[in-house]
Image (cartoon, rainbow, N blue to C red; front, side, top):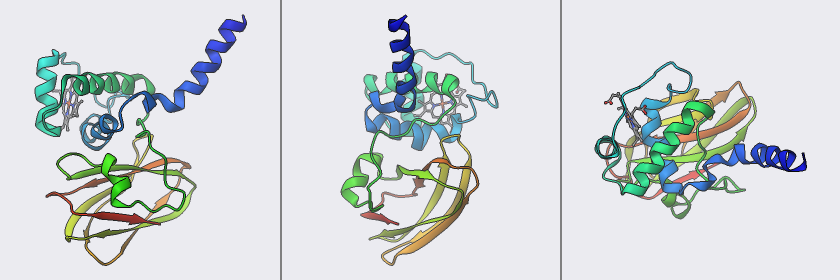
Length: 195
Ligand code: HEC
């Protein structure tokens, strides 16, 4: 009885941190790249039933996220499997800085190797107006998305980001965990994100 209760408790506490057992880099590839196509799979909005051997999957992953080692490919497959039952975006296992300032060093682990995608947690947001400011040493046009852990996209726009702070605003109706996905067309220089 006690054992069953403990098991139940551990399951309860394990659920919100399901992605904590995964390396940050793997979760970032999954959230920044794979979920742009596969986010509908949990709800049955999209059901991709084609079974792939790991060889085929490695090629599929490589075409969107660059060549990855076997360990990463198999972890991505695990994340995809969980997505179908948990129906929730796996959060990158990093803390949001208390002051809301992301310096390039803090963003490095959340940036793909090609420096063209970044995925970071914005923390728990309440309904209302929100904004962050962006600065990039070499200007370029970035696609910016704010995504809920339920996969709802509350902001999706392109902005010219350069050396002068640029404030980007969005509204939230549902309280919850939100994330920022940044998509660039060429490798990004030093990026600063602030409150
Ligand atoms: C541009 C859209 C797109 C992106 C990005 C993408 N996929 Fe896919 N994926 C598909 C489509 C379409 C299929 C089914 C058709 C096929 O097999 O080619 C598929 C099939 C799969 C399958 C086999 C079926 C399933 O749902 O289990 C897996 C696993 C998979 N993708 C994993 C990934 C991973 C991991 C990433 C990130 C590196 C990724 N995909 C990125 C479109 C995409």
